[in-house]
Image 1 (cartoon, rainbow, N blue to C red):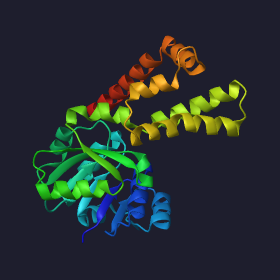
Image 2 (cartoon, rainbow, N blue to C red):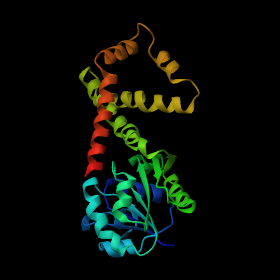
Image 3 (cartoon, one colour):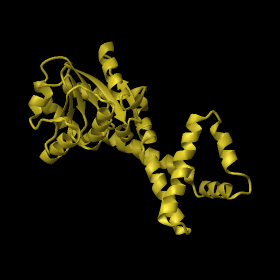
Image 4 (cartoon, rainbow, N blue to C red):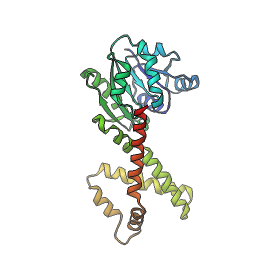
Length: 264
C-alpha cells in the first residue's frame, strides 16, 4: 500500500502521527521537511520514514497531506505539481487557504480536501472538520474520513463555515481559560497545586459531566450558580466586564487572520 505522505513536519503533523500510532495505523507514513532535525525527531518518536527529497516524497504518495504555513503554500505547490504524474488526493491542513486557490495552483491532477484537525488528536480524542472539493470521488472521500476518524470525531461542513469552525473549536480556548483561571486563583490566595486542581475541575470535569449527561446547559448554569451565591456573583461580574464581547472579538480576529492567509 502506498504511504501517507506529510509535507511539513511541524506540530500538527506530530500530533496527527502520534494519534495514528496510538490507533495502530499500519500504513507507511512518510514525512518531508527541509529541517533535518525535525525528521530525525519524528523518525525516533514515531517510526516514520523521513524523506528529505521533496520529489521522492511526492512521487511515493498514495495520499498527500499539506501541513505547512499559509505563506509557504504557493511556492510549495509550484515545486510539487511537476512531480505529480497521476491523479492524487491531497489534504490541506493550511488554515484560511480555500479549495479554489488550491485547485487553481495544482491543476486537474490533484483532488483537494480541506481538513482542520485539533492537536488533541494526539490522544485519540480530537475533532476534525472536512470540506471536499467537488471532483473528489466517493472512495477517496471514504479514505480521508477513515484516516481522521482514527484520531477522533469527524464532521463534514460547508467550506464557507471553515474559518468560523477553526476559530471556535481550537483547544487553545480551553488551555487559555485554564491558565487564566489558575493565575486568578493564585492572586486570591490559592497555592499553585490547589489552584490547578480547582481550575481543572471547573473546566474539564464540569464540561465532561455535561457531555455525558442529558441535562440542558442552561439548567446546569442555574444549578452551579445559585442566586445570591459566589458563583453567580463571579459570572455576573464577568458579564459586566464584557466577557461575551471579548470572546466574540477574539473569534472575529481569528477570522480576519484566516482571510489574510487566503489573500496571500
